[in-house]
Amino acid sequence: MNRENLINIIFTISVSGLAFSIWSICVVLWLGQHLTRLKTVQRRLGIAKKESDASRTLRLWREIYKDTESLKLPQKETFRERLERLRNDAGWHASIQTVILGVIGIAILAFVVVYILGGGIPLALCASAIYVALFVGYTQRRISKRAALFERQLVDALGIAARALRAGHPLIGAFRLVSEEIPDPLKTVFFQICQEQSLGLDMKDSIRKVADTTHNTELKLFATAVAIQLESGGNLAVLIDSLAAVIRARMRLNRRVRVITAQTQLSKKVLIGLPILLFVALNIISPEYLQPLYTTSAGRFMLAITIASVLLGSWTMSRLSVLRF
Image (tube, rainbow, N blue to C red; front, side, top):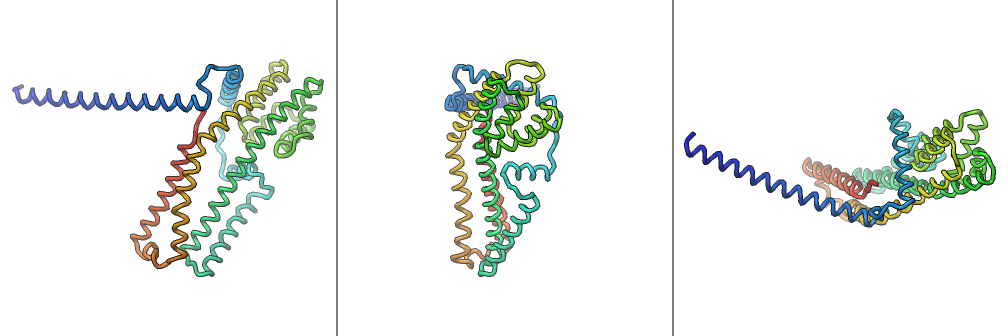
């Protein structure tokens, strides 16, 4: 090996070592920044403090719930089952076929009205798409409101059930009292449990069946806790009180998460709504200005890229506003 080759090898090793050192420094800096942000979020959520009795109870129940759920085989929902679940969560009394046909019919009506008024096919398609987007947003908002109402009613129901058990009522009697005192949507759940119990179905199976069809985390937690308690025995009233405290802690944490992510949600709505409103306004004020977007291949390509960018931006900002805890 001559001197020139040795110098080249040393130079290559030096450059590689320098690059690896720079990469390691960047990784360490990124990890430090990530841990700092994580601690900041935990401090703002109030979960970085010393573990209290309520948080310890919450952790224990989550571990029990995860251990119980891990024993079940995952069942993938079909598209029809997913639509039916969304209909139940939104509280629509009509069938899923009626809802879908109604949405399609109103979207076609919006397309025809805008086209007859002289808006053209692109503007008519935009009107139909806007209606569908508004319906999806309204449905999601309705689902969120019903879920929040369900959680609040579940806390009140657990308090009623615990007091009924201390007064000497059996568990099914406590559930019947809850179905009489609490309005919908929780009334239907406990009324179904009482009906199935009167028909001879096992209490554990009935509660788990209702929890699986409702798709509510707190109700699944309640079903798991009651099923374990019925098998092992113990003071069910104390367990229900502890479970109510856990759900209250989860509700407080959810409120803090919504407060932290409110700015991101508002920014997403503004940034997504501005280009759509501007596009509709330009089509109304000056249709010939946007005519190249529809008549030329480059314009159609740019329009498709714009739509894809808006959808990607909406999905990205939605993912950024999700905090897992």
